[in-house]
Image (cartoon, rainbow, N blue to C red; front, side):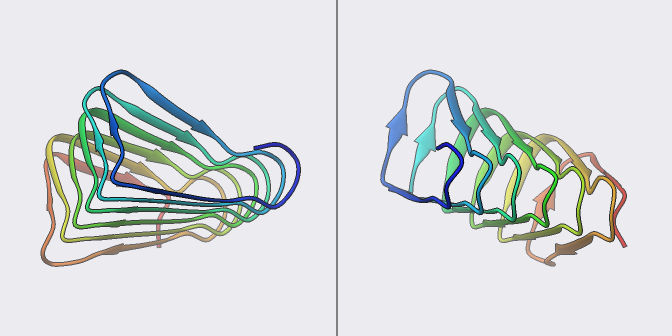
Length: 134
C-alpha cells in the first residue's frame, strides 16, 4: 500500500514463514479473518487514520501491531497469539480485544494521545502490561 486510501481483506490464508503488512500514508483498512500465521505477523499501520481487524486468526509466534501518527483502531476478536505486542503511536487510538487468548506475553502501548483499551471479560491475556490507555 502506498499513499492512497486502501482496503485489504484476507480470509482463510495460511502463512508458513514470517508475514509483514505495511500500510501507506492514506487512511487504510486491513481485515484478516480465519487465517493462520505459523511464524510471526508484523502489521505496520503507517500515517493516516487506519483500521486493523484480526478475527479468528492464529499467530503461532509474535504478533506485532505498530500504529502511525493518525487515530488508529485495532480490533482483535476470537483470535489466538503466542505473544502480542501493540504500540499504537501518536493520535487518539482505540484497541478492542474480545474472545482472544495470548499464551505467553501481552504488551500494549497506546502511545501519545487519548487512547482507549476495551478488554472484554472473555479474554485470556498472559502477563498483560498496558500503558498510555485511559
